[in-house]
Length: 144
Image (cartoon, rainbow, N blue to C red; front, side, top):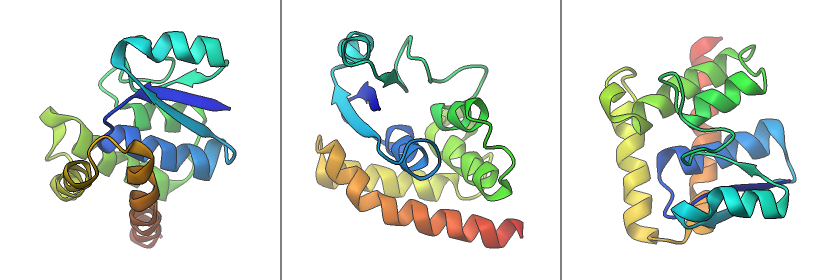
């Protein structure tokens, strides 16, 4: 399945692909397009839209897109994933940055990748995936 979102990804738009590939759709393909093209490209490609205005999976009810995906795909039974969602939420939602102690750290790391790799969203996914794997493993230990 194709998953379509806005280009110039940062926290949520990189964390979501990690979540999707690991827990929802291992064969997922990610398309990063202009902000105003997300819904049109998702419809044309028969894909899912995320983290964009009007997207199928996006911020709602105070939740970031990662939170919404965990809820929609009924992944709340994994305490480590719920804990990771708290960290991603804190890093992604400015008003909630201190809702998890790790939020500022993840935000800084994600912004660093964005500064170094600019608009190469696929490179950011490639390089940040091991970090999310490690963070999930840490969350598993923390919630065990």
